[in-house]
Length: 417
Image 1 (cartoon, rainbow, N blue to C red):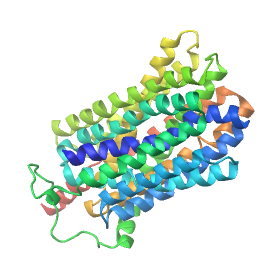
Image 2 (tube, rainbow, N blue to C red; image 1 turned 180 degrees about the vertical axis):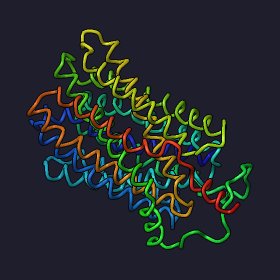
Image 3 (cartoon, rainbow, N blue to C red; image 1 turned 45 degrees about the horizontal axis):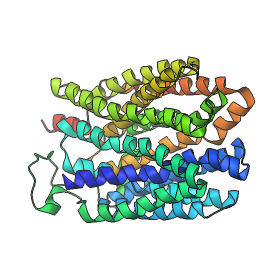
């Protein structure tokens, strides 16, 4: 349990050092006279580098200690946030935010390895969902902390405080997290059976080969591409949308956006539990049950984007509700893509597979930076909603062929019979 708490608190703190710029950016715009294109350039650097680093982090987590990777990455990203707050030029902002993006990749893929090591298939999505609330815990607190510190002491303080928190929590992660139940010399869990003869070689090269030769990984990755384009589009630009449509201050806009993470927190629990319920109910394909839940949530995204678009700022309860619902419907498929990704490949390369999914997801997130800012500047905010709804439909089409798919373990068991 200490390991689970450690990885959850640790990844919540990764979000402190990842999302700090989002909520400090309006203060930087006023203090440094930055325009939307300059902010978009900084925003786009992060996902470009972070996607590659998640693949690197995944391949490393399959061959070395996931615990050490999580702790080291958090330490470095915290230090980079502090350095960002001491900088003053656009070039340095882009360099530091790119470095932050790289070391952020040492967070999620190693955690996927830890979750699979500690929890069996029948309850894995539920525990994965509870761990995934770390996104929401960190995401709900960072608007208050970063925007609050920036409003009180300037944008530099808004970057430095999250960085300091990251440095401190990294030490906690290193001390209490363990790579597997065997590391603490006891286990009350019934682990999934693992073949004594490894299905793939232990080398990174073979792990990559197996992961990339799995067709369903590419389908999941394509869906992840569009899901992250939606998610980061909402996170990166909703503050500016609200302030351009009647919300008077950045602090008030951040408060409305904080409901996004609250809604996402509920989704992580409900979507994981629903997927596990469907899995336990019958002998159908495990992956297909995850896909059914994803399709339901994607439909909710499209409907809620329309609600946000038509919600007037003079009726704040509608905007609070819209962001809560968006968080709920976006975080559900985001969670289940990662869970399914760990179930369509052999255990020996699951972190590599999830790292590759992360790479594709952050290629999608690049759309939410400079490209989306250009669309908004050229065609207005209507284009923002049109593009995000289009991404929702595309994500659904990508995973639709997997609606009856069985997991790798199920397929292996059938072949052995």
